[in-house]
Image 1 (cartoon, rainbow, N blue to C red):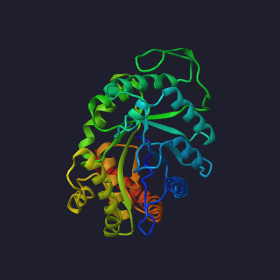
Image 2: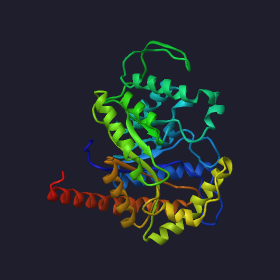
Image 3: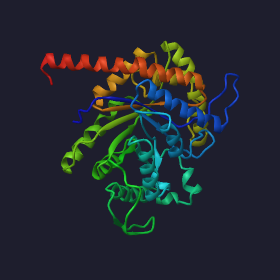
Image 4: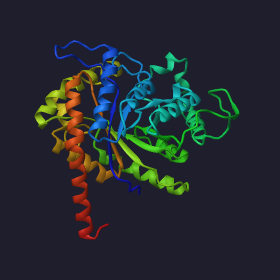
Length: 356
């Protein structure tokens, strides 16, 4: 099992939020706010800030690397990456070049999380056929794994032009950190292990404990393939405020609005407060509440899955920028030390009981 220290990070999709008067912010202001959020995350000691890629009106970020480069210029320690890069509708060579460039300007803090994405707008936008959904990701992920070696690449496939001894620049100083985001299929977990990527479990429904078989499968697959153990991260939505009730009230409207917008497209039932209260409870996937509540839930996730990073997805729907900043501050200054204390207590108890 991977035993590296737990890191706490944040993810955002750059959801279009509202001013205090209720009016929607512009895309431009939302993007500037995302950079400010990354700066605060660095200041409060968080380890990672991830920016998603979407191509629809609900979200402002279509070019995460540019937003991350702006954040790199104003931060010092925090690692900067995506959540996720939709590799299926992008070109692996260009993705590598952009992130190698980000790695240079951030002094080695760039990470890329590759995935297929949960939305399909990028496929017709960039001229890809959804009938090739599986093959696009499989081939491009394979090619990207070759590019990560930073040696000349010879490769051929059906979904892009072949490469013959292609050398790609810029070279990084210490290599590029790469992960694959997985929604919960065993095939995706095994593929991630086969290519030697870190695993990000996107847990956006149900309890984290039900993903234990996937974490076990990933570790077992790495071992059977003769590869070193790699880190596991968890991505789940959340929001922190002074009390549970305040956090619930601040988060509910935006969560409901976003769920209902997507639900109308996908035929989901109307989202309501009862469903929300289940989702923020012990068996739900949302980490919404006071610092103590959120810390306890994160610690329980780590005990269940053994993940070495937790990425809380902030800004679900129309929650305001000032509330997001408050949530980030509490997450870094209150939740982070509490999680480490809870895990240290668990470890000490296990040692005393002789079960480690």
